Image (cartoon, rainbow, N blue to C red):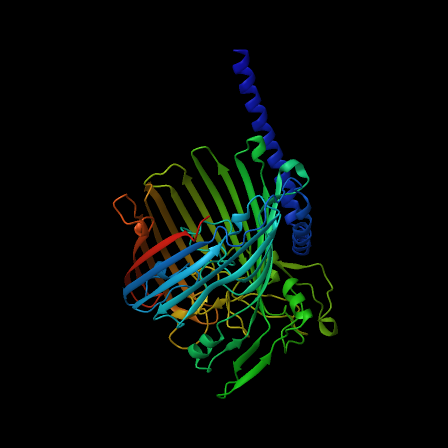
Amino acid sequence: MNVRFYSKQLIVQRKRKCYSSFFIIFVASINFMMMKKLFSTLLVLLTTLTIQAQYQEPVRRDTSRLQPLKGLEYKVEMQGSLSKGRTPLWLNANKYGLSSLETANGYLRGGIERPLATDEGRKFGLGYGLDVVAPINYTSKAIIQQAYVEGRWLHGTLTVGAKEEPMQLKDNELSSGSQTLGINARPIPQVRLALPDYWTLPFANGWLHLKGHIAYGMMTDQNWQHDFTAKQSKFTDHGLYHSKAGYLKIGNEEVFCPWSLEMGLEMVSLFGGTSYLPDGHGGMNVSENGKGIRDFWNAFVPGGADKGETTYQNVQGDQLGSWVMRLNYEGDWNSFSLYADKFFEDHSAMFQLDYDGYGEGNEWQEKKQRRYLVYDFKDWLLGFEYRYKPDNWLNTLVIEYLYSKYQSGPIYHDHTMTIADHIGGKDNYYNHYIFPGYQHWGQAMGNPLYRSPIYNDDGNIYFDDNRFVAFHIGLGGRPAEYLKWRFLGTWQEGLGTYEKPYTKKRHNVSLMGEATYTLHGERLPEWMRGVDVRMGIGADFGSILRGNNYGMQLTITKRGLLGKQ
């Protein structure tokens, strides 16, 4: 009885310690997140700790020589799609841009990869990959989907090249997608410095963990832009890309605490390159955007101004991002999470307020009062995720709600000599007046429910439907060792854009069911064992995607190891 009572008392004490510690650190973190200098602090902290993290693990020792060819994996894949109309949304979206809207399309894909995990336990790790595609009825005749080399020193990694990077804080198979760093477009060749996995900070008794990345790259879709626009509408050559993200996790598995909280900031800047803008008379105005060191810095810490801006200056380039948060409960048999993705296109939407205390007359440009305009807390992606861990017919449930109709409100004007009020709205998500928007090869780089420009028939690289509300559900299960399935369903109501509103609301329903079976059995030839056969059926109903679409998609994939391991 005494032992049983002591064990129960110990568990209660641990739970109290878990909840009290979690609450204290959560409140402190919220206060930190609300600081005015959060953005700069987060970036400096991430960069500093990426370097400092290299000296926190003296236990690792390299006891053997690095073997660059050890752990080399191969992948061969064939896919074919047939549709009535366009390829349905969920047979096309969130495939890292490796998809097509054509009625009949497909590809043959082959790749080799040496994962960084091959050198797990060593101070230094080497990874690389090459992934090439021979497509049919795609926007390209040949595709280098991935080509990269990366190195790891303890916790930090440096990646050079184009690599498919997964979404953070969301289910990559069942979510509709992140609003900023999504998986809907082709990878961008870049140089990327990262803490890819959570690293425990050397204070707070193991309760705080950090990960994130900083990257610079160059867009590769200029030839597609030329063909799509016929050089008659806006396009940009050799556009530059910058992304950064930092995530702070509060939780401690060492004290048996099932709760954890993840908070982060994701940001992207499109800048540089040469932009071509119609002059209204059949010609094109050429804008040579900044490509110097200062311009790279203005992308890193938003600042500067676009070419031609004088009195009313915004930051340089197309700046956008998301505040993200995820609350997790991790049980022995199941887990659940609540998460949020708050999107913004400028600093006023980022901090939910704008300065509105300018003077009048000759003092119209001077800040005279402490007065701010507070925007409504709208434009969210809110989600719930449930997981049942043992293999079952239903293992995962994802429910999401998206709202993007507000965009800082329908009114936009800057203060003048006669009007002191400064109201900023009509943020026009994913679009920009100089750059061709937040897209790559015609696909949205964020959430695909912002209808990608590749759907447009008028030759304009423009997001025609960025004001919408949507409900999304994702289901997935593994009823047997060799069988898994998933289902995606989305209802969407669109209003167009503030600039080009629809004359009436448009609606859309997109559905997709998919099953994957892995061939196995002693009677099968060796080369057939382990082959994945995936069949998907999809449909769209409504007017947002311009008509009803029905389609099916068959994918056959073989993975394995090359040589003796």
